[in-house]
Length: 483
Ligand SMILES: Cc1ncc(COP(=O)(O)O)c(C=O)c1O
Image (cartoon, rainbow, N blue to C red; front, side, top):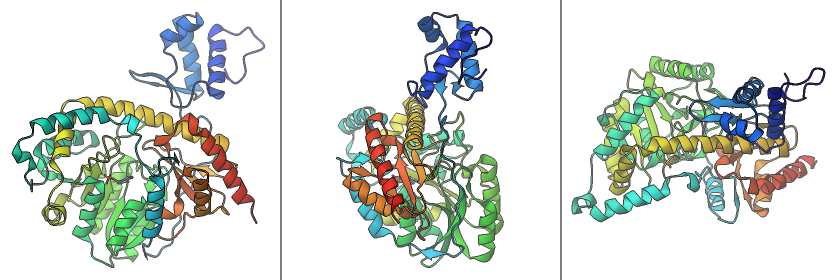
C-alpha cells in the first residue's frame, strides 16, 4: 500500500488508514525528522486500535522508508525523508600543492561567530544544553575541594594514567587494542595534530589532505609552512584512494591528513574496509597518516565506525581525538595515539606545553569511570541525529532550487553548495547584517575552490531560528539573481 493516498477501491483496513494518517503527520511536520513517534502501545491506546493493527501500520511506514525501528529505543521518523536537493559530488581540486594563507579570514569569522546576538549557524560549536555540564561542574568542584597539594604539581608524564586507562578501554569499541602507554594526553585534538605535524614534517614539505578540509587543520599547515595537496573527496565515503595513490606517485608526500569519521565539513565517513585499504596503501609507501576522530562517537547508525588505527600494523597511524565535541570544548582534553612516533611526540609535548592541565583530566577520567558517558552519548547521538535531519529538512524546504546539500550519518554539520554565481563571502556579509552567522566555504581549501559553499552548524538548530533560514534563502536568491 502507498500511504500517500488512502486506498479507495476496496474498504481499507484499520491499519492501512492508520499508516496513511501517520504518513500525513510526518509530511506536514507534526512528527519531525529524527523524532520518536509514539510507541506501539501508546499509539494503540491513543487511536483505540489493536496492538497488531499498529504494528502492521508501522511495518508499512517502515517499508515506505518513512520511519525506522531502533532496537530498545522505539520508532523514529527517518532522517532525510525529503530528498528534494541532490547530494554533492566528489570534489575536484587542483593537482598542485599550495601554501595556505587563510589566517585573516579565519580570525575574522571566528570573532564574528562568537557574538551572542547572532543566529549561530556558523562555528561548529557543540550545543551546551546537550553536554553534561552540570555533572562535570559537580565532579570538578568535588575534586577541587579534596585535591591534595600534589595535584598542583607538574605532571610531566604522557598524561594522567586513570584517563589513559579509560581511553584505552573505550578504544576497543573502535577496533583498537591499546595499552594506556600507547596514549599521550594533549590539550585538545588541535594540539595533538600540531604535535604530529611537528614530528613528521618540516617547512616546505607537502602533505596530502582531504578536500574540503576543516580550517583548523589548514591553519596548522599554514603555521608549519607546509604545502597542502588537496585530494578529491567524496561527501559520503571520504578521500579517493586512486587519486591519493596518483598523488603519492608524483609528489614527495610527507604525511596524509584525514578526518575519517564524520569529517568537518562534509560529514563523510570512510567505510571501514576502505580505511583498511587506506592504511595498507600508506604503509606500502611508509607515509604516516594523521587521522582525526573527534566526531567518531557521534554516529547516527547503530554501530560506531572503526578508526584507521585499528588497521595499523606498522605504527604509521597517528590517531588524534578529544572530548571537545562530546563532553566539553573548554576543558581542553584530547589525546594522540602516535604509534612509532611516541617518543618524539612525548618530547614535543613536554617541550611545547609541558603538560595538559591536571584537574580537567581527573574530572573526565572520573566521568568515564562512572559509566555515565555511554548513557550521555546515546542521548547526544539521538539529539544530533534529529537536529541534523531537521536542519536538512528546513534547508531543502526553504532554499531555492539548484543547490546541493550533504546528508551526513554523524557529527553535526551540513555542507551546502550554493548556485555557481553566489559568493559565500558576500552571503556571509549579508547574513551578518541580518544577525546570522555561517561559515563561508573559502575557509576549507587553500585554493578557494569552495567559494560557493557554506557550512551550517546543526548543533544550534531549533525551530525558532527557522526565520533565519528564510532570510538566508532570500539573500541567496538576491545574490543569484544579480548579473
Ligand atoms: C575535525 C576537528 N578537529 C578538531 C577540532 C578542534 O578540536 P579540539 O577542541 O579538541 O582542539 C574540531 C572543532 O571543530 C574539528 O571539527
